Image (cartoon, rainbow, N blue to C red; front, side, top):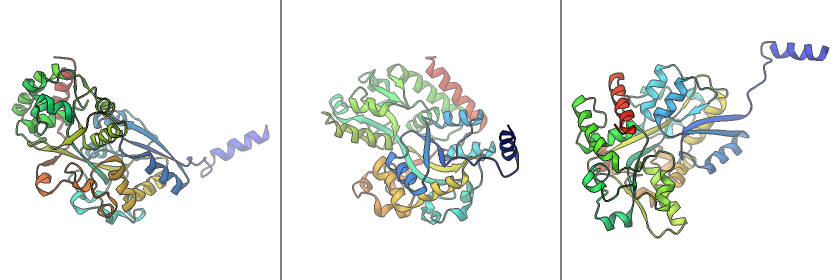
Length: 355
């Protein structure tokens, strides 16, 4: 037994603890990075990427604030960075380990959510909009260029049972606020009351609150209209084409304006492998790797060095590469104050309960 006592002593001695395995634990949005990109990083670093996913920022924050640990890199939306910093769950970036940081487009750097990019590096942006079955909506005479298509019962009655919205109060309420001409970040109780009435009237016509499988449902034709993310609708279009569906999946901006969400990489304060976390973030800052987010996933790109590697036809899609006029109507979501957040969550709970 002498060997066992010696082994235990070595384990307990300072500096002799076993090193964390060569694994990068990534906690990020569904469908945010391609398998090809992760495999290329694994080949580069000689490590394994272990991904975990979430469907809404609220879901991610709930898990992290409840004490979930073991993650190295997290991919929150900008409005999720503020509460993570307040909860002391992030570690500042070591920018000396990020030699490609200068590739960021200044328009997407130094945001109010993280002044000076102390904690975060933006890697993509998505637009919240409507995706749809072009053939079905054309036959029904419904214009998807307005939020009215998903919120007006007069139109929804033609689509009943074939509409989904994200299971995400921040995104759906923000879209309804824009529909009524308010800021997506409005804290006005009267505006929220107006939105509450609209959502309650529309709710009976929606088939589901769905942040997980609406790509598939749209691709196979079960859903004709969905409120979701631009990169997801890009994927649905590609999947429908690959499956030779007898219809085309479309997606586009709404006249009343859309929410734009900037997603960033941050490092958990208790990351097991902060070294791999920095390597991964810098890998994603390289132009060709950043471009894969657009070419393979269909997300917008805040990386200047990526542009020359993005397929030209994608640069013509307003939801992926918005022009100056479109950009003026895109609004990033801010972190809400506590009273507004409680009011929104209460409305969402009642809405899902059919109240």
